[in-house]
Image (cartoon, rainbow, N blue to C red):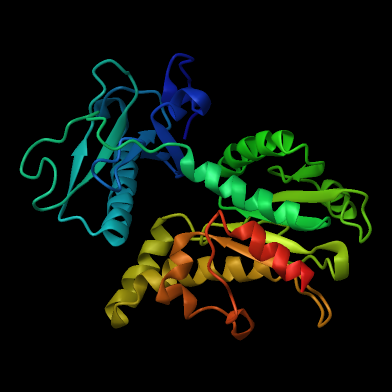
Length: 330
């Protein structure tokens, strides 16, 4: 794709705080960026914005337009798989915003606006930052449980930045001294080694490394003993929707309706297991692992837990500090 021209007044071009007013980022795809819309009166509503700052489909080449619609179809399949709507509505509005984007709006029989046109901003059900607050609180309680070294894994750099911003405020409020390290895109081998060298057995303060799941710090590193005593894993590690994964999904669906598992759930769970496996490296190691996603309570995920996880405990954000404290005091 040719070099992109950005409009500094356009939320979809500038992203960050401008788009955060109405949406949360999910992932980057080949032709655009996918967001979950904060207005969720139709559960599962998402927005897909093209990478190019154009206002009309006719401003794209035939190839660009075909690729864009192919990815919209991939997103729609994912929405159907997760939310099971009776119909998905599609809207490319933007009378006052000159940037091509599509709203994908799940509709449910007997539900709001079934049989009619969806309202752009009904304001009935608005997502807030409550979930990020909750994730940050879980991580905070893990860090407060015992002085030592921890890793926290996120599904994307953007989510890492957003949750860490909330966490940093909590750490300051608690007057908690934690040395924070952050994985960055395209780290050199020297930067990677310097990151890992910070994980010493007897540090003077708690150390927290924030990383992306499936990246260079979630596999192939050995932090035995007290070099690492805990990890938090945000999300189930599902890979991004893509043409190759969709081909794999369709293949296994034809074999026996297990396409989503083979294309997405199994690879995602493998990343989760790799990240969690950084904590226990020898028979004498002790540590905590937090799985921060309600989907881990589903049977389809629990069937993939290793045998040594069978003694896991389910806890709310108000219970996690007590449970971690009890573990370390046992």
